[in-house]
Length: 167
Image 1 (cartoon, rainbow, N blue to C red):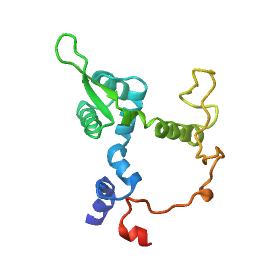
Image 2: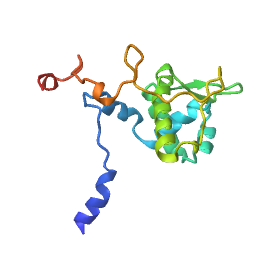
Image 3: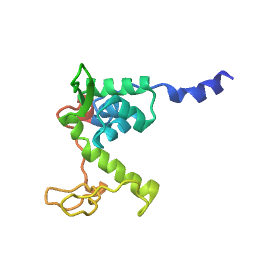
């Protein structure tokens, strides 16, 4: 019975990545749960007030408060005083948060393609200048040509640990 309980609950134990020398792992420390990414999505859609985040997401107050505080602490959102008659806070994307536009776009496009399927997208993102859907995000080389996985060469960067450099 103890093994059964362990096997059912071991997925609930969260691993910390704050000591990892990996940009993906460290980014997951900031963004790595679904509520956090959905709060960021709402901020991109223009949500600023706590009550609006709560209503739009259907999230409990305590979980929302934790996620907003986490995003403010890590510099993704800023908490700004928007009160006219007393103190009232709103949240806005910082430059760091705005830099997530490519990540959020790529994630949305992946879901459109592989979860919903072409023609069934829940949200269309259009280029205001042309009125046409934005193109699918692709990795491109310096000359603008699309890159595939086989075109990439991975090498340790300046921030890599010594053992990674030796490998």
